[in-house]
Structure formats: structure tokens, C-alpha cells
Image (cartoon, rainbow, N blue to C red; front, side, top):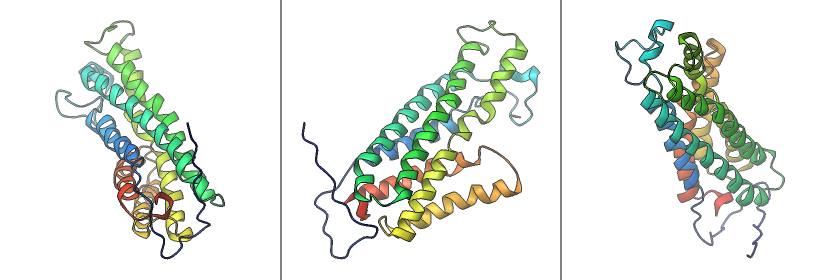
Length: 234
């Protein structure tokens, strides 16, 4: 197996550079974002609950949770975690050697790895809910109070971990707008991605807000890295 070193690009993009070939590894990041939306929002454990009032979740309604949604959320969630880790590893291998003086580039891979670690727990709790909830393989192993604990963990469990991706977006923002090694439009997309939830954090400490923008950021930005003209992926 031959290892090919990536050419450094200094801190800024040069002019007149011609890409040798397109790179498709960022599509792994796109897939992580797509699956993340499905796992976090599409298969929220409250999906399909009877009564329609998912915001009024008292202990007497814990057994209305959809164990099928929880199971599918667990499976797609763990796939999302795997894709985030692959994306992080590919970033370290493909991007960081090209910008050896960039701390921001290291922040990106670190943020993706941190998100994956946190989301293992968040999506793992979905799996536990699918086992112990009504209709699950081990329903009755925990009493109603025990099952309610798992519900509470699931309330934001699959959402909080996306904060790591928000940090990664901040790193990409710096690379785009300060170092000029990523397309500027990607930088401005990253600004919006970070500013929206962080601004709301200052108003109300809702811990899962990162999940509302971070997966979409993965889809848009990594598509741009795959098919755009960013220096770090040319």
C-alpha cells in the first residue's frame, strides 16, 4: 500500500491553482448528516405516540413511546456515529497535512470525534428504550419509574451530542473567512449554523438546539467540499 503525502497549502489559498482531481471522501460527511437527521428527528422515541401531546410527557404516558421508532433510531444513530468517525479520520488524513499551521483544522476533526462519542450514548439510550419499553424484548425488566428514566434520557440524548459538530463548524468558519483555505460561502453557512443555536443558548439553556442546524450543516458543507473549489480538497 502506497502512502501519498498531501501538498501543504500554507495558510491561504494561492491563485491560479488547478485541482488534480475531485475528491469524494466528503460524501461520507454528507451521509452522516442525512442519517443524523433521520436518527435524531425522524426516529424520535415520541414519534407515533397516541394522544398527540408529546410535550406533556408524564410518567403515566411512558408506555406510549414507540419502541419501533426507538429501535430504528438506535440503528440509524449508530450508523451516524460510525460515519462521523470515518469523516473525522478522513479529515485528519486528507486535510490537516495540507494546512499544518492551522489549529482550526484540528478543531474540526476533534469536534466530529467528540460528537460521535456523545452520540453513542444518546443513540444507545434509544436502543435501551426499544428493549425495555412496552412491546420491547425485555418489557417488564424495569418498572414504570425505571422506564421513565430512559424516556428522560432520550428527551435530549440524541440531540446534545451534535454540539461537537457545532464546534467543528466554528473551525471551518475560521478556515474559510480567516485562512482562506475553504470556500468563503462555506464559511458564511458555518457562521449561520453556529450563530443560531448559540444565540438561543444565551436566551434559554435548551441543550439540544445544536441538532437543529448541525446535521444540515454536514450535508451542505461536505457537499460543497466534495464538489466545490475549496483549496483543502483540491
